[in-house]
Length: 258
Image 1: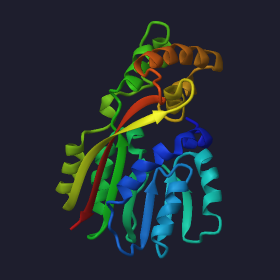
Image 2: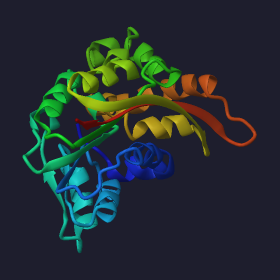
Image 3: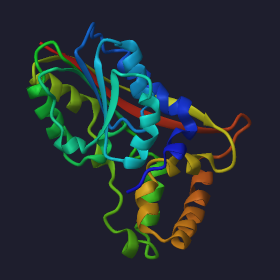
């Protein structure tokens, strides 16, 4: 599945805020190495290099398109680098003291076991922080799955979309970190995002949740699917005086290994 960095950062202010809410709870002092798993276009990873200028800051992503964008971000910052890699096969090094994953683990089936492995491998005093979308049962996703399961689209989209099983609840992530000997906290936040323009929720999901669908459909079929989906979204998220309100739930967990 290919990613479009420009589309992903289209709603930058809204997409960036959870990252800062997450990393604001990480209180590492002078870490040796900081790793951002699923770093995307790298603009947020760069803020970690600014925060910890003495650290080796590494962004890891499986998208070559995203890393092409990230390469420009790293230019002129020797402590910041990016690597092509699958987080499903990543493990921390002996120097890794901060691991951040922002809006990426939901794409990895079984990521809970990955977190257990990372937590076990991190040395005492290390920090781990993660954030995943918690809106898989919201209308934006439920309507997409319902349409994909219709008689017209099910033969072409069977097995493409996942549901609420993509992520756990905050308590489950908290338990994983506590079991690994972390002092940890987990919480959720629902951001009431006010989006502007025509079909703004469709524009939002084009950057993320809709990409698996568009990746397997032809351009003609993709346009037809979007037309039906957009009509359903307009009913679920009506335009109001100040724009279209799009509630977005996010799930967070942060901990420090004892």
